[in-house]
Length: 454
Ligand code: NDP
Image (cartoon, rainbow, N blue to C red):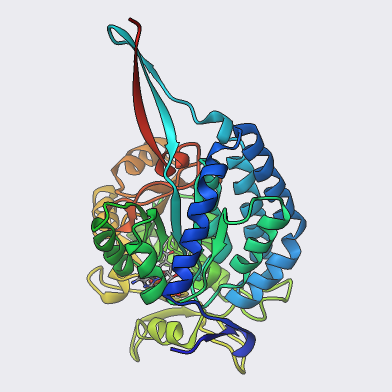
């Protein structure tokens, strides 16, 4: 494999940058650096670690526009989305800057003395992240990992390494000690696998495909490494006949075509109560054809290209000749890995397009008759990441929320990712939770101490 990595701009297919590609030895060096930096970082006074993380958040915010442009070009995402993501990175680091002083333990009544618990940092943590939300997903892991006193080795996807590399520089600029944040750019099959196997890496936090997640869980078993996995999804968007159909149809495209559908939370199965199917489709067509697809740096664009030619052919395989295309948007001419927003209807729940994660701008619409069938169809998947329920009946909203086998969901909204609330999946969408007040649990061990009083 070449020692040079060519980073491509998906909207133009032009070379964005040529950078050195790391091998296994570079991973070992990064782990060694992180290991050396660990004791001092862990032992820093909590208020000082908090102060450095606040400075890091401010530094990211100060470089927000630069990072957003880099992310928009490298990942092919609309500039306004990229700005929002960089804001979230700064907010996430800022939120977890509050944690070093709040890693609380318990005191437990026992006889003969006092028992209490403390939370200990794990050591070196390996972060393996995908190309769809490169820095924002890294930020979800970096914030709690660093706040808890761990040092990290971050491996971005080879397709989108640029913002992670810039983050490593900005961490130093913000005053974080050398070796606390280390970025290694190299292939998952070698560099990622080495992080998973490395005896000095205490934990792997991974986001990516269910297939690779499975191999990481298996590989980590060798050293009993801690693992958290955020994997794929095939999330349902349930639209009941009593819903505000205009609102549901106006919001559905953003929930599946956002980031060109390359989103683990994409509500790509739109389940609509049969009595309102035609009305809903008419409204949906209006909002899908209005989506502006084009140059990610154009301020008015809402959807960019797919990440690669490979991803485009994978997506296209779900829409073979003769597929029931009910709505299709438009794409620009010329170079770029474009794929139009596409709605398939009617689709049988057993079809491949209704069962597998497409990870592109293709949604399926499936009718249902009643609440029971809606729940059964929604849960009929190996995945369980997110979902939405549209209804004006509050009790139904509550019932269906409890019945869905998913980790994050929303009622009369398609938003479910927030810095301050837990995020993660049921079933084969993974395990562990990121974001929110408990994310630091997954980056610490609980130690129980007993002190005798005699
Ligand atoms: P992968 O799961 O292959 O990649 C995610 C990350 O894991 C990348 O950094 C990758 O490195 C790394 N990686 C790959 N193989 C290994 C390994 N054996 N050990 C350790 N790390 C590894 O996703 P793809 O990019 O291949 O995308 C394929 C499909 O996965 C998508 O079409 C989509 O369905 C799903 N996916 C889901 C995501 C989600 O957010 N849930 C995110 C991305 C993909 P590198 O790429 O540099 O080789």
